[in-house]
Amino acid sequence: MNKVLFKANLKNNWLILLFITGMMLMYTTIAIGMFSPESAESLEGMLKMLPEAMIKGFGFEGIGTELTAYLGSYLYGFIYLTFPIIYIVVVSQNVIVKHVDSGSMAYLLTTPNTRKSIALTQSSFLVSTLFLILLINVMTGILMSITMFPGHLQIGPYIALNIATFGTLYLIASFDFFLSCFFNDSKKMLSIGASIPILFIALKMLSALGEELAFLKYFTLFSLLDVNRILGSGSFTVTISAITLLFGTGIFYGSIVLFDKKSLNI
Image (cartoon, rainbow, N blue to C red; front, side):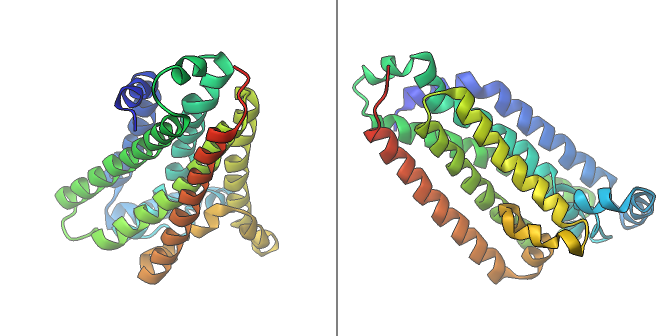
């Protein structure tokens, strides 16, 4: 891995990294700050005033008076998917295909670094910063919960939920990184790299609207993030985390091999 290139990535992507981390921190702190068994009951009452389709679509249907389940419903049905996906799409484009499209990859390839080294560095940057975003939010959530509501957060299940979330996002990141290695045109990569995750989110929301549309859950990766099952079953969490991390790693490896072998018009 090339440390100089890694630092250059940080310099070029720090703004989007800071923005996504900050937005997620804002929602995390607001969600925890709003919690109490009494306020959660009031929130449930407020939600009942909204259209049922909106409640189900955004994952607020199962919001309860227990802190762990409350955070799972409030944050992990939409917010903890949407913002990381924005980061994944933007950074996946920045680390490979943007350099190819602009011609700057020619400069990188004149250095002593091999294509594999460059691709490995870029994928490592994407994964490590994605992990950092979630880690900051998880630690903030745990510290705030312990401070404000001692004993209310089930730390083990909460961490398990975030491991499963990272695994799912890791798989999405591997797909977008593959597209970045496959295409030579940034626009083509962005159009597909953004549309597939957005479609997954849309299908997840639609599948929650009623039994007639429930079959759509089989067409979206985000059905794996069943908050209630993750919080209630350690074996389910281990299974989906292992599957997503295994497949994601395979796709990352294939992407690096593809970039090493492909013909570059630079």
